[in-house]
Image (cartoon, rainbow, N blue to C red; front, side, top):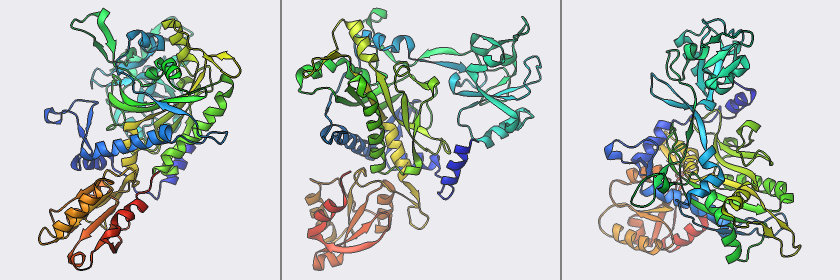
Length: 542
């Protein structure tokens, strides 16, 4: 464990561990997220959003749009920045993906395990070798683990496969970089010692994969393209081949000139888009964190090359503000700069990329990517200008300078954002009947309030229905009449409803209702005529 990981464990030592299985179970039980095609056993990497999940997702989407487009942040000059929106097609001309580099370069090195039939990204595998590793000694095993695997799990696996070294006695090296121990052919499956011409099939014969104790089950890495393809028209064939977009960004770049020609925006400005993207993830996992169909919230900020650093720093700060404002605690959120070997092709010549990361239960004590802020340089516009033949350079109307804008890209995962919000909000509490509640920011909560008649007879449901009808045009409220009041409180706690208004006999007598606050469970009486104003005051905007 690194010192940083040790510190992170200390930071979260007082916080109760959250069980991902319990979170997933709540999501299905209460109608947030279901496996796609559930009645047929599901389909790996695809998920459906239920009645409450779609409301939560839409609330997060709308908040992002408000922060970025309808009410954008104040820029370094003290004035609001200028951002407009687009909604581009999922399928674009295939030439666009050739220009962007996705057809030829959007791939990952993958390895298969012959025993378990599982597939892994080779660059996500870490090989553990004894510090005394000798490629001539066939008794040496090379266990391989996924990055981020906890030390205690690695030690258990060591014992299981008979690897008689402690972690402290081992070196770790990325699986695809084992050439440091000799010349490697076929991406590391044949090791050729520098001092000999004899080939030693060390890795193939002695490597133990992540999910097996059998040596030699991993195949050589092969490049695997991540784009879904389809066919346009009535006939198939390569001449009709097209792709589902793997990111929403390219639709923005393709419309750069259209936006300039049809609006009054001037550089620096941004174009935002929210939409579906598709990737043939080989190993979808961790619920909706890594799936094959997902939604992105992306903005491309076009600026003068000399101002790229200014705007990169600006968006680094602004995007962290957003996630904290809607409820992610600072100790579960961090900004991490990419290492040089992580950079995308469009960022290698620029100022780099940083990720806003969140500590999910399945990554703890480490973090998982939530949003990336990248300096894409002028790569995309230059490529599309070259391949389309359409001039995409910008002419400054004041200085008459012509230049290709650089791009700063804050790109967030909407579906990952939903998972982060649910995870952060999930709060076990043995003192209440539900045993748990969702501490969602009121602006994100699927239901802002619940109207609960104490009983389903006499005037209670009549008054409750009247109040519901008065509120529903302004707030997402739930009218819940069935079951006893304790079970109804428990349900509202589990779905994250901030306030419950109960109608009882006293309501009939003096026109007051009981307000119950979700987190504290405290109750107070207010006039029924003041309920709407109470919600306006407490369901504050972000």
